[in-house]
Image 1 (cartoon, rainbow, N blue to C red):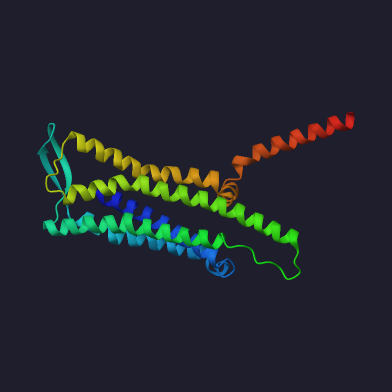
Image 2: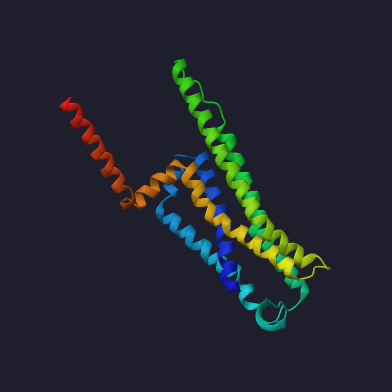
Length: 246
C-alpha cells in the first residue's frame, strides 16, 4: 500500500510537470509542436511517467516492514525501516526535491516563459492597417489575462496542496526532537488530504478555465450533452413554429 501510494504521488507530480512543459512548448513553437504533440507521443510520455514512477519508488517497497507496537492500544503498523539513518534522510530529501521542489520550480519557469511570450506586442503589418493591429492587440491582452489567471491558480494549487505534507515529512525526518503523538498524526492526515485535493481540484479548474478542456470533454462524452442539444433543438423548433403562426 505504501509503495503504490508513493508511485501515485510521484506520477502525479511528474505529470503536472510534463503538462507545464508541454504547454510551454506549444506556446513557444505553435507550428513545430503540431508535429510532435500527437496521441502516440502522449501515450509514450504517459507510460514513461508511470514506469519511471514505479522505478523511483522502489525503496518504499524494499524498506518497509510490519511491526506491532503500543500506541493508543496494541496495533500493527507498516513502517519504513531503512538500513541506516543516513539512507532514510537521503530518501526523504530526494522525495522533497523530486516530488515537490523541482516540479514547482519547473512549473514556475515554464509558466513565466509562457507569460512573457504571450505578452509580447503584436507586430504591426506593412500596410499599417490600424483596425487589424488593434484587433490583434486586444486578442493578445485577453489571451495574456486568461493565461495569467490559469498560471496563478495552478501554481498556487500545487504549492498550497503539496507543500504541507512535503514540509511535514521533511520536518519529521530532520528535526531531532520530533515526537509522534496524536496531534502530529492529525496534522499529517490533514496534510495528506491536502495533497489528494490537488488531483480532485485540477479537473474542476481546467473545466472552468480551459476552453480546450471543455471541448475535449464534450467530444469524449458526447452522450452527456445529447439531451441538452435535443432540448435546445426542440425549443428552437417551437419558437420557429410560434413565429410562423403569428
